[in-house]
Amino acid sequence: MAIKAVIFDAYGTLLRNEDMMMIPRRIVADHGLRVDVGDVWRMWGELYFEATQQPPFRTLREIQGEILPRVLRAFSVRADAALYVDMFFQVTTKVELYPEALPVLNALTAVQAGIVSNADHEHVAAWNFTLPVEFILVSETVRAYKPDRQVFQMALNRLGLPPHEVLHVGDSDVDDVKGAKAAGLQVAWVNRDGRARRHDVPPPDVELRDLTGLLSLFQEWGMSVGQN
Image (cartoon, rainbow, N blue to C red):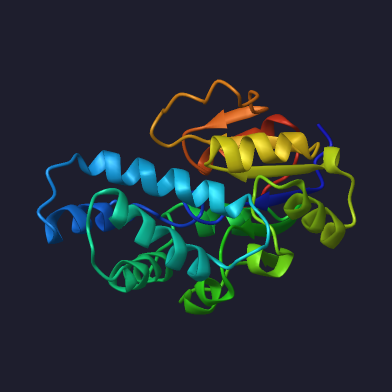
């Protein structure tokens, strides 16, 4: 497989994104709701995805400011949602890298590398680490969100490569696998928790438990990787 570049998703792939459930838990606890936290989580997620795929483009801060009040109203909570919007940005800006992320990125010496993320500029500005990639492309720049083909096309334009020469690595079956496959890229699905792929998502080219599997994959393809 002639891969000349790798583009990575950020949250859940390179960056730990495990505190998001804190927000629906807090909503349930703050208002003494007799509902399952998972129900709040699912409604929030459905509204989020719907909002990211409908024009006009809005930043994540704008979207959360619209949908979190709807979540509260759906559970008969008449409170200001601003606290939970702020919590969303606290969680998504105070992040850390997965332990294997930097070693893997540093080892990919034979290919170009970039990041594509559904994020606002303020997310990247808050990261307290530097990543060895040629570019970081966020949805606020593209004015679109994955799985929209436009996101992947802008990354391809930055790389100057056709889609079949680019591998996309991500953890979301819809945003990353479905989106990148539709754009013609090769896809490595990082499935850390062994969850099932949704029925309308095509199979990835490869499935990995974590990013270290990427180095073995490159070696299988006869591509050199650096030593760390």
